[in-house]
Image (tube, rainbow over all chains, first blue to last red; front, side, top):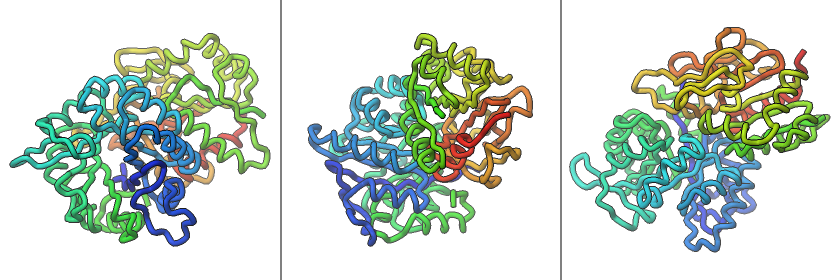
Length: 252
Length: 212
């Protein structure tokens, strides 16, 4: 049976982890490569780096981080943040990313989705969507790291990018992000039941039960979390053990 | 001994190269690993690896665009029976044809065709993530337990014409070919380079394999 994936996400700024795990044995807690290695050995199914570096001058450090991670971690690595062009995608893949996540650039230039999927294969292209509730069963998407509102309907947008060849949707609820009250399962199930491609749940997970709900209520294929792992509240193993106890298939 | 990883611009080249390097460094008699697309490089190989992601036709066109690449590869694999491993689309290319984006001819080294995964509506396509693999015993699957998880990402699969060429399967929920074998030609649908320790074991087995 295909397993539900648990994906820890690291925010990286100028090559350094912004909010990282307080791993006791870590010599350099700010080194994303060191953190990635730990998640890798703990049984993470994939890794995700979100580059939040503001200045494009400092982007080179990210490529080094991706390269070193790929040399040490033999699980899939998704990299997103600031991806705007085919050339950006190409450079990330060349440095060892397995998938590239595109957010704002796909909204501003929807052709990029089809072009990228055609050139590198659908499975390489993840479309990251930041959605905020706008009414009953209705969500609008935001761009620029959640700072800029749009009048684009989240569900319609997800259907469109799926049709254009996106391989996966990374769906973040802006209402839930940082709240620890659980994923927006209504958003997840609305999108997930309307498209064929996998949906990764993101935003709001605060306890083990939330992971279960993301699968059973949200219909997510994968569950992404950042702070719950970084602050050491739960380990990847804790999450997987709990999911397995609830009869959800995970890779142990 | 030289292991050649064929570079035709495949997106997973770097990952494949690094995974083979990591495994190779632990061997008693490591290979010289060469990443190349030149016929002279390929004609010097003792073992060959063909990575591949993306669309079947794009991969095939990329290979044929490089002068002499396919011819030298065919000479080594079919003519000289060198051990060969194809990964993902690199494995699907071994088929006679693919039906992805219209019909496209493959290498035709293993009888069968590449067709769309058929699954009930609640099953997401692409088939993406970790799934259990069951297999027939073979030295290429040494030290791997039955029902071990490997990482898959694909929407099409290789339906071999002969059962004997399909040595491993996964379920989604119907059986899907996970690995193929014909004499010196081996291929995996899953990505060993992304399948953590189990993937490394497959690579180890391939490096130690001496096809009879």
